Picture: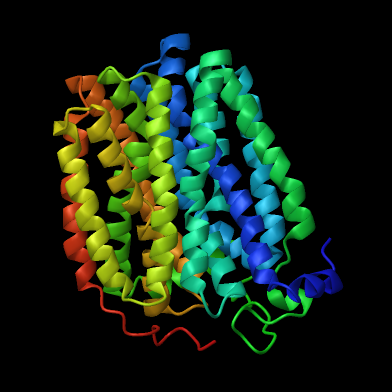
Length: 427
């Protein structure tokens, strides 16, 4: 367990907020590796067991929905039992699910492991946890902190996808189960040893603050009470529903479509699976840059305006991509352009939620918004597979996703940041 003296000794050189950021980044990195794995498993599972793409996509859609649906309650649980205990519990479930998947040989086992257990365990890397860390540890540079944590989604792809694709080619889909289980096992001790509950737990003010402030107290005795209390407040605001709709569209166009189906789409166009994984990795490189830059911009400019541009540019890229030649140049252009925009919406959505609902309630409320994101992703994961099965092509899936993003760019401009809801007590 981290001692206050050790933390203060570290803070003589660098504020421990940045150490915490690194620890949580690494934890989320491993979680993203698990969530990215299905992208390289669709084709191998189809060949190994003869399962239909829509069946495999259905299991993936279950974990996407659960990742969003459990987010508000896990964020509420974090306020009751603590950040560290909640994260470790989630990662143990995640590790158990991926480990057991090594032995699966029927679709129901796929749904239990990669659907149910991975969905529940992945909640530790959800946006609510990242938001809680950013708001607890940073008064200044909260946007940049959120951008860096969100960029773990990009870095996870960069690190894991080519490795997992190689494992699939060398050892089959079972190699993926072993690889991601080992990655999760490696980060659990890191969390236990180096992650404090809050700056106050080690006697320090948050970065940019001058006084030691304990984390906000839970208003309920259980995570359901905490989650539904915040939802009751937020649901009275039209801004909440606009944030839900636009972030659901974000989910449609990212983890639902691209993360799940891009490698398979590339395969349809004659591009080998390993090369398709590298395309996603390149997207991950530029997404890392884009997310960090988005966090930096959110500390300086209106997140609502930033979201308008993010959704507009993403929509154009998705509409045009199916009509490209799928050669080296067009794939490179798409990877760079889409990559810069891919997870840039995360920091901006959280910053806008902070502006509308206040820093205390924002982590739980943004978890509800993230639930909408995951519903959108699940619909796209299943819908993309269904469209591919029925029409033999992903063309309409990409065009529909692009048009939805253009709609989101219009809707986000109707959000009016006007401070906290009157029902939410001041911090």
